[in-house]
Length: 262
Image (cartoon, rainbow, N blue to C red; front, side, top):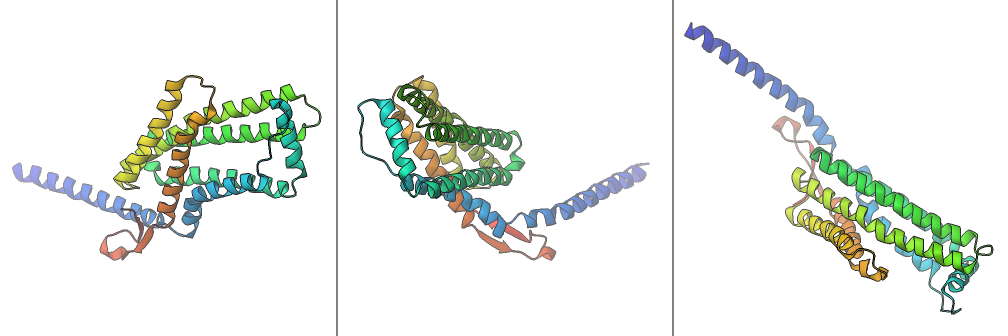
């Protein structure tokens, strides 16, 4: 009786080991394909491209001298100066490409940490919300530019202030994106501990600053946490983009292709 029971246990253990081996064999190729190839590097570098293109677009537009004393009229004069700038069309195209690069980076980074479950999902929601806020801000700017000859200075100032409020509100989803994407990277070990914890601190600080200040009148107060998030995007983008890929022998029981991120 004991021998029969022992044989059944041995048979069960053997069956479980075979199932585990088959599962590892099935997952092995998928893991190998998730290395950093040329397409992955495009997604990784899109974060740095977003920062570069956004700053290039702003530089092409430039900043005009202060003119009228009325803030609203000054805004309309600035829009007229932008309309007369020969680089305005190029600047607008560059800014649109910057938004596309941000969309690509959000999708890429969330795909790298997707095994973290709800942490990665929350990061994706935060990044998507930041994209919507950014596009809404661009829409307001375009509206003021197109209607510069038909709207009053008071309305122009109101729309400009609405754009500024959108920038403040954008800090929340960007902070969520940095916080939960970094936490997901820490769980999945997609990044090292230093970069993961740095992103958690930066994202958490941005949310705390926004929640603790209430409704400030000075938009420049939010400049430094916003710049920290942009710096985090650049560092993460370059870290993934320049990560070395190693090719392993599949027969050795190791992944064929994986990214080294120390």
